[in-house]
Length: 455
Length: 124
Image (cartoon, rainbow over all chains, first blue to last red; front, side, top):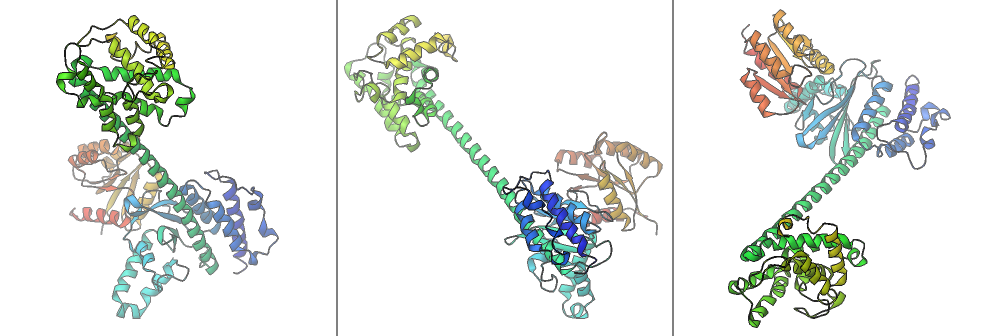
């Protein structure tokens, strides 16, 4: 490096380091503090022996911290433009959705200033594809494409006469370089992917770029590529997470609606219990609201979901009960009653194969159990009856009492509440009865959906 | 040979400057308007052969400008420049007599070729 050039390089490096630290575009401080970066290393070291490696290591460590690659690229472009005295500097960045390299930043004190986002090169553009082919006679060992090499190639008689294809290609490359007035094109690789191209015009003083400068560009470009790749990876990941979340929500919605449709199908078979499922579900949710904070509920995995689905599907087993029993006017015979009692087992059997609904199947099976162990199908008692089943039991009984049945007229709300209290501790879990009464007092039982007209 | 006359209409100064330089270097005579009103005044006073017209502009947009241009002059070639491919807008532009549209970010030699080809159709 000659003496004339050296000072501007030292200046550039210091300036660059300073910018890395003070730049406000999404840079976070280094854990080691800013001192390590801002320390004017070069003042003690003679300019000729400046440690590029050290500088680049620091620069690349800081680059990773840019959250938006655009900020990093803007900074690189600005640095080179202001400090290197090049006619213009620009960066082309690959955008997969356009299969193109888009000019995302450009600066020029003289000559060309290309508006940001206005120009693109397609991936087939010779100026881009030249880097894939890795032709040694086009690209010097730094990996850089130089205008002067292209011109030398075009002036080479051997190429003109013996390699007409190459000659044509050089012509095309020259044309493309002329279009954006490129003197030097530096590829930005991440692994084997060409993520971008750093385009430099001529030095204003007319000098050639030195080997050292070009080496610096290559390292800078590749570090930048890594930072860009990182940022893109994170962006993709965030997008994926969002997609998965949307998909989950969608599937969940579909599932809940399927459950509602199923429940409606059960209700439809029995005109007397029309709307039963919907009301029971609403009562269950009202009860659960009052239970907030009890440890049993807090420890229950997916409590709300299980409650909602189990409430919707608690009578799904009625699908297996013959019409003449289900729709019978008048009291059921003991045999018929045995038939009806099967519905909780049938329901659990229907739901059992759905692995994700393991808890729901269990709750449906036990929704007719009594707190004192006198219920069915298993006669279990107390807290051995699963939580959701104990909630459904109260809600189910209340709705049954307050709606007309083939064999009896409905009770008044007061009568029904009295019955709940009377059977608290025998048929029902007293905790659930209290929660129901609380919900009723707060108006949460009356005010729910279609149940309002029914009560 | 007479220099071919272009008018570049865009509310971004950088774009106007760049396109102006680009075509001047290729031997065109290029004037610039930063809004629709100025463009119309220029079409009246010194009509160009071809207009590169940005669609999204503050104030009078490209479509409205195109309408007014057609009221004044039916023969000027107009190429629309647009940032997004809004098909409805493009269809409207075509009905109003735009000959082609170019999407930003654009490919420079495509821009050059499009202008050249459209000018070739005009008999000097």
